[in-house]
Length: 391
Image (cartoon, rainbow, N blue to C red):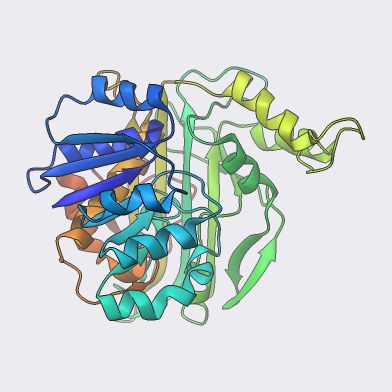
């Protein structure tokens, strides 16, 4: 199998590394406009499978001969021309998946459904951790109940050594962080899809020793199309992001002052308040870090008429030997696994759909375990709170 990764940044390089380590992959092609990024990835990945190209994903003529040599494409860049890129991939016989660029990417690509379906190819947006892994596990878990009632997703990356005032660092996109903190949050209440404000519905949450006192709050983006899919099937569904305590209040203060607004600073510049905030976040909160990813999915319902709770849980530390953050690792591994499965033809059919519809939950769990991403699973009697660890 031959897979193309578009974007040689932090997550793109981690995806390429995992693909190159897969026995079933014969070639890993990677495209980026940055010669430096491509040189860095060539140094960090010692594999004769790797082929790099300094080319823009917007350049259809340059991309065509590369796509012709590939079975699947993984998009690891923010790209406002994703529909054009997806169409190009389909026209050259390539499956496509990415990390997700918006809550409504599946709807934005719906016009390509007939093309993908007739070609027997999959277009699968949102294949990272959230959206992505949490959505697959949530739907997989809900389907294991005779009478599902509620699903609670708690996920986030936090620094192992938090520094005030924000107690937060990120190794991904500052723009994505702000989108999550400012966009409308979709969830299910009383069986219907509704909305709430981000950075609200704060709760205390514990993940055991060292992580006893954390907070979780609503953010946009992570559920993607899951609320519409589970509407009427569960009474409650929400996703909350995990941080060290105090983070939500401090971010509400900054955003409340208007620093996330896309308004020009004044008539003499095109810079917006949001541009400035993004730059300062990159300077003060970005860069490499020792982090830990925490994930818990708790599902309530009845099995054979008896109230039960199903819990999936992950605590993943950054691997200092690989020099990548835990968040990059936990984003890259699911995306690479999904790309391998659709490229191998392990998922029949074709079309445009989110990963929870395309990839069977157990198939993904087994693939992640083989890559060292251990997600625990436990059944408990009664309805157990999502804020506490296993009893």
